[in-house]
Image (cartoon, rainbow, N blue to C red):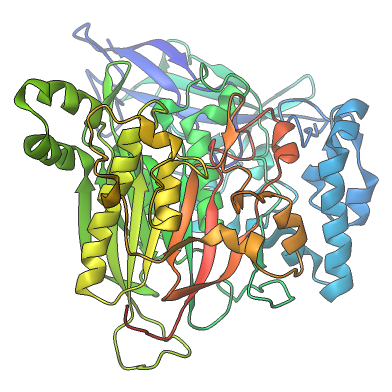
Length: 603
């Protein structure tokens, strides 16, 4: 007979909006063991599995700490209540928790006050595109993916249904009838119970016991203070959102670049300071999606996207928000346990803003093979390939704009845009390989530029700090022969040094914060820049490393920067030790720039 051997949950702490899928191990009638579902529509030997979820509701409601969501709150900030901030942000678990968080907590009060003074519409200004209700409900723009599933957890919609049991001040509400359950705002502060029973298909009566498991209390999804777009074109007002959430300015477009931290690398060994529930993929994917969708970028360049996550999650979810998806996987797999996993670069663009013209795939392994065939003596080819073959890739996409650009000299002419998305090799001792990969990419982009007069964007995680040889080549168009990185070149692939040049007029978008005149918000951003390199102080922040590795470069003869997404300050991140954290689900921060096309001047 069909029997349940084991039931357990992958995470003890359930979070609003994040799917709970229990692990259920079964023994079939033929004695084989499986994790496959046995629905009523396909019973085994006259039996099927029935699932039920309950919310255990105490007569006393439990509030949850806004800083440590797994802790019960013991005090409330009345300033938040007065400022009409979401009530979930007002709770703290101890006086020390409140005082430690005050430096960052006070910003919410200040923003609420300034928003009321400016236009009386504090909610939109304070919470921007991460607008959340006091109950911890996810951004309403996710209705197509998250919120709707919260309402139909199983075959019967809109729970809770009848009270199933009441004892000792506890009431159990049935909230779901499928194996998977997505906690809602109504579940915050309550324990959930999952039951899995073998049921006779004829009598509909359970056989044996129900295999119940209890969760800890449901916590709200942490909602980080939203990052604002800061104008850098001298206009002394904050960009305002149009009805669709984008900065409303005709003829401009926005580009996001973000290394989202592949699940295969998000291990508790590497990030022991991050709570296990916040490091789990079911939580991180929803938090990342909420963040990415919230930026409303016209073009999205993501790195470290696992191929299965692209196919099963990001492509279909972002499709609901109007994005077309393109993907280039790396050329080798990483083994996670017994499962081969591979990540790559994914580029998305809004169909209402752009159409796809052409796609180029750059595999640095193929370039390495060609290079060794042409330059390396036969007896050294194997060791050369061992050094050069690192599976990194780049995805180059040519798009055509569907919007008009003010000031373009020939409005009838097609407005094309070339967007490169790459993830350069991580190993710090392979300085020659990093530089060679960046040079190879730039040579490919030069060929495209020679065949078409086209603005270019080069985005990604270059695993190279400001001032390194790869960064210098990108920003300056050449690398000085005395640069210390050039001393590492055992294969002589960087010689002659005169070839380490390119003709693309590339400028780092975020250098605009350092170069341009003072404006509203610019002074604060300038303090988050390195004055010696004109780059952010960091885009990657872990316990062991903090520095800038990610960039958005643009061709300055054809594009101009209008605004930039504000940078984060290290102090606010260090309250959670480092990234990733419950608020930010990658060890990198997202970069976003708004551009305008300049009138055409032939290069």
